[in-house]
Image 1 (cartoon, one colour):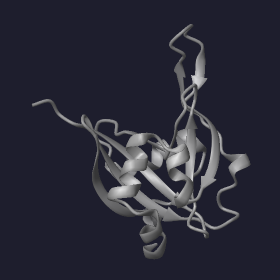
Image 2 (cartoon, rainbow, N blue to C red):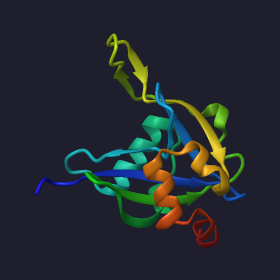
Image 3 (cartoon, rainbow, N blue to C red):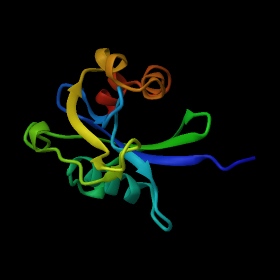
Length: 149
């Protein structure tokens, strides 16, 4: 049996219960900031590092609520944390991706994420990848999460 990869990420909600989604460069989908842990890194450390790399947002580790591990795709699990932020803590226009990868077609270095938006739970299906939308529909209700945070 092949080992499942685990991607660690942060579900950021604002005061209205909207979720912060990042647009994956040169794809059609929007996602929460997430990525694989590096050797020796805890899921929380990985989630915080990915958050900084993909959005520029820096949050103290203690504010993240550990939501646990979710089946995401056939080959991948998600270990998610959640946090509620105030209006002035996360400004979409200040988000910036510091993580680059080579574009498949010509090798040009491009950012992993190239746009950011607040999305209401009702609109998540319109923007999120199928896997993420399914997770929010079935296992991790954004509305319930908003009430718990």
